[in-house]
Image (cartoon, rainbow, N blue to C red; front, side):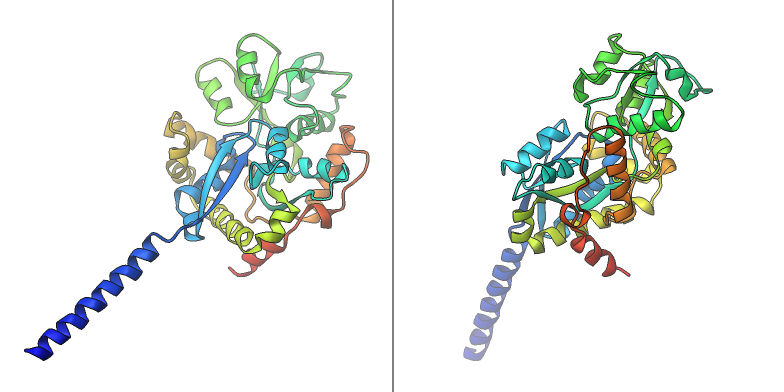
Length: 335
């Protein structure tokens, strides 16, 4: 009897210890990372897929996502230490480096490799040609931003001078362009999804061309952080990058309908059918990078586009502005 009681007591103690350790593991705290995205769009589907599918959780990270509504605001939040990681165009980090800041930002993971905006007109135009932009007013967003510069690049590529042959009205903030266009301002506007397709569904505007299809591959949206933050949080940055890469691979191997279903929680006010249409449109033009490595040749093209636009007088060194060590490590680990 004593042996039985003794055994029972040991069993109870072991059970209590097991419960204790299991409970500790279940409630183990994750690293909170604040991320500020330049805008909220299905253009960033791999990111939302990584969140929805729990890839960040698998890496012990809790994401606190906010919408900066513009690259300048995102960069300001990062530089002022209000945000850990910025998510916007790499051009912002080029500007910051060229300003001579000691603790400049470094791009460590690429997400999108083409412009994700579409040129929207007032009428359906299945036979659209770029010459139709001659003497027209276009709402392109902020001067100096990649959307603006990519549009200029596309216009030049099609034989027009954006300064002489068109009127680019950059007086309207990015977040207000759709409203301004539907209110009667401009002949054309560049918009991201799902706004462009929503406007088309409502009969307020019609997609006539893809800017990304015209420009080719260019590093468009990427994650960056202050050099000091990256140095102090190397393991965290690696885990963050791994989660992003998982999202990229998942999106690459799944259909538009599957993507729409997974990212739907991030777009509660958008119909899943519309999200599917948008996802297919983005898959068709190849906007999503298959891995987070920003290559030197892509970085060079970005600086070429910036130079042609008159926004860059001195190239920034790739090895300073871009840190591919984390992306290369997570990609190599999956081969």
